[in-house]
Length: 251
Image 1: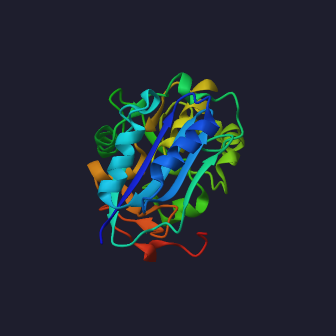
Image 2 (image 1 turned 90 degrees about the vertical axis):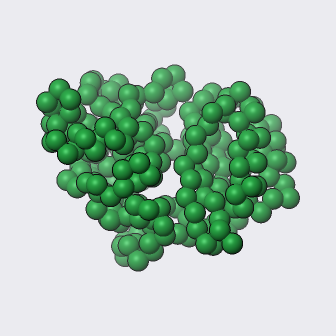
């Protein structure tokens, strides 16, 4: 049996979290879909896997809510179900940063698409001739499984450490075009907003993260695989499971 895996998020104001949680649980009742859906006042974040018809049916249902119209999902396939159970949880943040001033729903940081980033990396500078650096906003063990060639990696152990790491290392980003990246886009979006609010003007998020880059570009300028938080552990540029790429420090 081939399993459809999806990852999606949206920063949008949600005020009725218990009611939304209950509605989602009812919509999923009776299905074999597994994974995690996180709900917070700042939005939704989900990683799900199951029969393609069931997963697509759930997405169709979810998108009927005006807050989730057009919600984009990144897709990949596996031969086995990568999740052990299904969870629908209410959290303080859909990705914890412990920096309440960051409100992505009020406006996104500028994004650069995968093809543009590849072109910039090919030529060694952006379209204005400024040096481009890629900034890995993930945890250290994720970066150890694969990252962009020459990327900046501050060796954080959890995303809540990112604001302090940025404050300590901000000087190495001055005068450069910074492209923050992560697995699917959610961490690098928050990180880019933080950096722009701190005064860096030439900061972009990689739209859709590494998974979308793999889909649109492949392996160019990227070494290794991408760590994912399910039983596949690591996927390669074809979005196929490559658990052998997990380093010993990964948990």
